[in-house]
Length: 289
Ligand SMILES: Nc1ncnc2c1ncn2[C@@H]1O[C@H](COP(=O)(O)OP(=O)(O)OP(=O)(O)O)[C@@H](O)[C@H]1O
Ligand SMILES: [Mg+2]
Image (tube, rainbow, N blue to C red):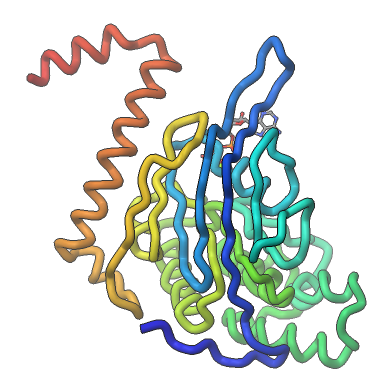
């Protein structure tokens, strides 16, 4: 089923398991403390695409920041192959919803930046590896361009190359295609999926888009409304390589309904809590009966 990943110029893609246990996180001063994550347990199995979907503002990016080591949780632990995460590291690369490319550097300079800073590779190896990855993401003609000269989809592809050059054990994607127009988004999903199916790098992909989630996922983790906790884990048993047509299958439709039911319940909960509109919702529910 899972193919063996091809050897890259720098060796094989490492496979890791990520375990998250008992995570709790709140923001704000004691008098106005807001719980954002509560008792969250999650596994990101090696070589799989784990997709996390949750309502807007539920705490997805906070979870990403904790796994990346940018934030410390109030309690709980993240382990990467058994080793506790204590801070950021280039074994975990994050591609954010906002571009993190440096506007004053070209695509090639952006892609080379991390390893160059750490002095890990000699110039020639680094240049060859950057060019290989730039080719891989289809930006050969654009390697000397600056980020602002690229379309949104091209910027995301440059980001992927920038992350991949670090040979991360875990790739974390936080709504990376949010904000792209519908056509570019679909193209990016297909492109990204092809990369994943080639190398099977352990991946945690965060989205709020159900079709994107089912298209990509081996495991779909549905979060509650804030404070985020895991409501359900759905194993997405669709064949690979995936095609868009599979989203029209009965199986995909059942997965979608299962996830949407939970998301809908969660959205209603937060609407009731946040809007003070419970009277309206009850009246609406009665009318619908
Ligand atoms: N550094 C911070 N300080 C204070 N509050 C924060 C901080 N980061 C996030 N929050 C709050 O935590 C909650 C969850 O935010 P987060 O960005 O994790 O959610 P999200 O699910 O990623 O949202 P979105 O769907 O908009 O991407 C929000 O109410 C937000 O205001
Ligand atoms: Mg977010």
